[in-house]
Length: 151
Image (cartoon, rainbow, N blue to C red; front, side, top):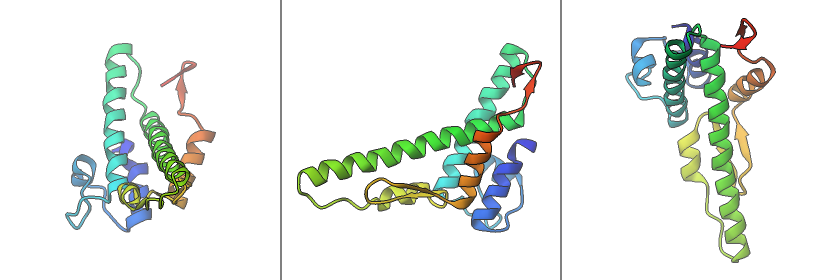
């Protein structure tokens, strides 16, 4: 459960009160039996990948499991994916502008990343204040270390 507390807080800050249930943890489903918005569902999937990766490291390298490392890794990976999406929109806008064509609306991309972020017509990325806070916290405080090595 400790792994999911920050995710749960982020969900509640973005979509409202949602209990931390097995449905939320395992299926990304809120208290109304609705799948989380696509951006939160993507973060949920990334989190599971980092949970599995960290449990693998526990087995292979005999390291203690660190829930903070899961959260930090997931937030860093999400940030990379959002930046890649924004760059794709920017590249497409520059190409279409150079061809004197009308720019595409990034509406489809924004549906995929809401409520965590949005991207403008020219590829400018806007994080939600809640996500921005988590990104900054992740950059400032790396996961706790044990015995001098990151866990």
